[in-house]
Length: 224
Image (cartoon, rainbow, N blue to C red; front, side, top):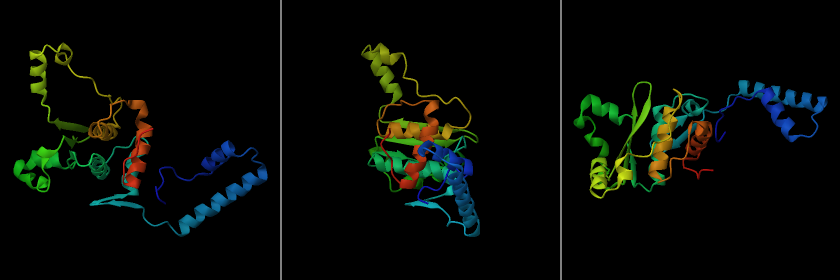
């Protein structure tokens, strides 16, 4: 009940779990297990469990929202924005994560359409600004740091720091069409908490599960 369910309860799942934990799963015990599973599933159909929700500040996530973290689904705005809130909390509000609707509003209505969005926020006191952007079928991230790129490049040239002149470290790259939202959240987390970007496409299934649990717990966890 606490974490909802990303995996439906199936008889094969139960038997596979028991085989790994029970030395001898005889026919009698197997039949007992299967009858219990059948009885439990019938009880759920007769009396559905209450709607699962996670509520944190102004954010509410349903199980449908959380299920966007399953498999290779695309993340929705609700998941993006609540996770952004958790990132701000973990950074002690030295980082500001703008709502995922901000860019859309800015592009359609200009500054006047978003000027009230930061009425209670002093952006210039922040160390980092994170702006998730949804481009129809793709999530991307814009970051603004107090160190301006043009200044750094000019300074590097002046001080003959050729390593900085030649470019910047490449960030982890997405290799499919489904995980852009997860990459955006993991970039945001690492940048906000000043962690190295040491992850790749193969880590995404594990990251999805961690984000799911963090959203349910309403706090970020230490990474494994």
